[in-house]
Image 1 (cartoon, helix red, strand yellow):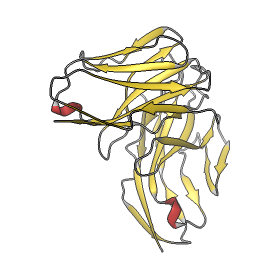
Image 2 (cartoon, rainbow over the protein chains, first blue to last red):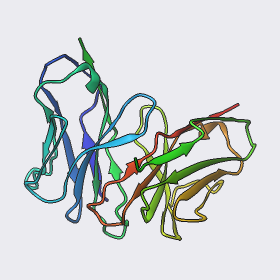
Image 3 (cartoon, rainbow over the protein chains, first blue to last red):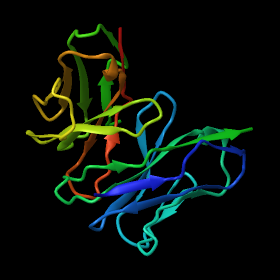
Image 4 (tube, rainbow over the protein chains, first blue to last red):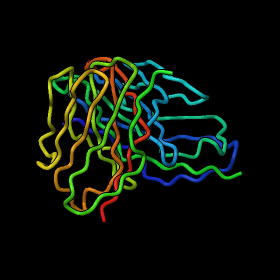
Length: 114
Length: 114
C-alpha cells in the first residue's frame, strides 16, 4: 500500500541555520504531496503542497519540490527561526478509492535554539 | 475567518463512561474527518463523511461512532472509553475527496480517561 517515510527526529538547529527534512513516498498512482506543521498543543496546519511532478510548493520561507524520479518531497528552509519549532508531517493523498484520505509520515520534531 | 472549531479543547471522562466530542466548520466543506493522535505519533484516521456518506476505517474500534446531522457539525461518540483511548482527537475538513484537496484541521480535543 501507499506509505510515507520521513527522517527521524528530533532535529535541533541554531537560529538562521539551513533546514532539510527528508521525505520519500511509495504510491501506486500519482499522489498529491503535502507538508503539515503542528505547533505544541494545536492541530495541524497546511504548510505547502504540490500536486504533480516538478511542482514546487512554498510558504513562509519553506519549500519542497515534487520529485517523481526519486519519489521524494524534501522540506527545506534557508534560515530557520525559533518560531519554526514544531512537528512537521509529510503526507500524501492519491485519491484512488480513498476519497482523498491523507497518509502521514511519522513526523519530525524540530527545535530551533536562539 | 472560516474555520474548524472543536469543543471542548480538553475533556476528562471516567473509564467506561460515554463521551461525545464535537466539531463544527464554517468552510461549507463536503468532507469531514476524525483522527486520533497519540503522543509523538502521526494522526490516525478513524472515519470520514463525504456529505452524508459515512466511511469507517477497517481498524477503527467498534466503540467509536460518529454522527453528522448537517453539513456544519460532526460528532465523535466513544461509547465505553478505555485507558488506551486517551489521546488528542482531531477533526478536519476538505472541500471534496479529490487527491489535491488539502485538509483543514481544528485545534483538537485532548481526551483524558480517569
